[in-house]
Every structure is written in structure tokens, then in C-alpha cells.
Length: 357
Image (cartoon, rainbow, N blue to C red; front, side, top):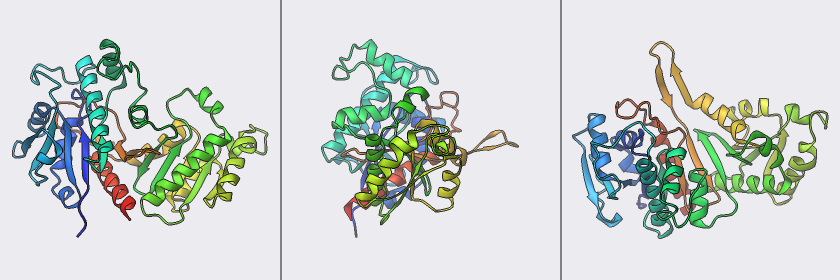
């Protein structure tokens, strides 16, 4: 019988819904059949979250180190970090230096655990970029190894793992997308569509699929322009940058196809034509994923499902994440949906097991 992987889960910004969905997700006892989860965060905030979601029957177990964890259903192991002095006085649902600092420290800690081999994979709840960067600036980099700004989780992971070539993958079940660029303006994103970068992302996408146990994955590459530029009529990036990258990938034995018009590639991928789609910019990949993963119930006027996983590829460690924000407006109400976190944990398990084969 194989050993179940240890998954380190950050609590996210404590002012958001991360602590609540963490409790809800780990209340799914079947998760313990697949992995050994441990939360990295402030135990007081997890205890408060358990009250918010009416799960005071669950025991919150204080851990000083990973080896202290019990990994038992009905118990949530928390690698405690003293981050919020007074949980009751802490402002829920608001941007704060304290919340931003707490979220950042949890991410830095879980990366350290993974790099040291104490956890097999990491899974992150959402942080608020404004709060985090306010904290980094407030402390003048003293709590962040001199860093006073990060764009988000991806850049933190790249910095603390020394990774130069990386990308973001979003997944909803078998629909997967990766990005040539993410957190830049649309104008800059167009300028970043270069052969070398597109080729790097195709390679990373191919490896990610193989790490998940997909043999000979089919990698679709989306175009940038309408109708893939119509042979240069609407733009030349497909001719000058994207197609040469695809040909180079094929020469390396990668089953890459394209460029494919962006208005049709995602419906084809949903139909099982491809294992993953390389997208040229942030919204090209995010919009289709969130359209299928985020389901709003018109009659009940509430979110029926908030599914999807964010994965950082190219790292020496595994990082998956929820595919939604901090949910400040929902924090403290106990109503946030935990499915995205459950999916993220399962993706972390799948990637860990795939790499062991």
C-alpha cells in the first residue's frame, strides 16, 4: 500500500474566507483516505472559522512541526504560526496589513516545508494582493527577505524556489489551460508573445500532463489574433512567433498542434480533443475556465458551484491553489463554497502520485 502524500495547505488571508473553506474542505473525511493534510496558519483563526461554519465538533490540533500531525478525520492539524494576536478583534472582510502579512508568512512557510521535503505538495488559499503588498511595504521588507512587492502567489513561489521559467495552469476537471503571460496589461501581453516563451510554455504544459499520468499529451496552442490573424491580415504573431514555436516543439517530440483560433479551441478541448491549451494571455485562459467552473443559481441568487484549480508549473515543488479570490464579502458568514479547495487538494494529490510513478 502506497504512502499517502502530505499536503501543506495555507490558510490564506485570515480576513477572507480561506479559513472557513479550509474547515469545510477538511470536514470531507474521504480526503484523509487520499492524503495527509496539514494547515499552515494561525490556529486561532482556524478555530474561529470552525465556529463560523458550525463545525465545532471538529478538533483543531496544534502542531509545532509536521511530525506532530495526527492526520485523523475529525481533526484538523494546524502548523501554528503566531500571526494574529487577537482573533476576536481582527477585522474580518477588510484589507489590512496584519492580514496581508499573515497570508504572506503562511506562503513562505509552506514553500520552506516543501523545499525541505517535509510536505509532498503545497496547496494555497487566496491572498489579497493589496493587503500583502501593503504589509511588505509597511515592514520595509524586514519580514520578507528584503522584498517589498510581489504580483501574487506565482511570483512568490518563483522567487523562493529560484525558478526562472514558470507558468500558471488553470484546470476544471479535464479542461486545462496554461498561459504565456499573466499579470501584465493586455498591451504588454501582446508584446510578450515570442517564440522562445511560447516554446517554454509548450514544454512546461507537456511535462505537467505527463506528471499527471497522461501519456503522449496533445497540447493545443491558441492563436493571439482573431481567426489566428488570417494569414497576416489581422496580425502576424501567429506567423512570426507562435507557429515557429509549435514546429520547434514538434521537433522535440511534443505532440503540439496549432495555432488554433481562440474562439473554437476551448470547446474542442472540452470535447476531449486536447489535454491542455496554451493561451497567449491571462483572460484568454481564465474566461473559459471560470465560465464552466463558476455556476450561479439565478433562482436562489447564490453560487451553486465555484470550481477550478490554479497550478504553478515549472517549480521544483508542487503548488496548487483555489481559483478564486479572498471572498471578503462572504467572510465570517459560513456560506463560502469549498469545492475549489477540494479540487486543488485532489490535483496536488494527483500530481504527487504522478511524479512518483
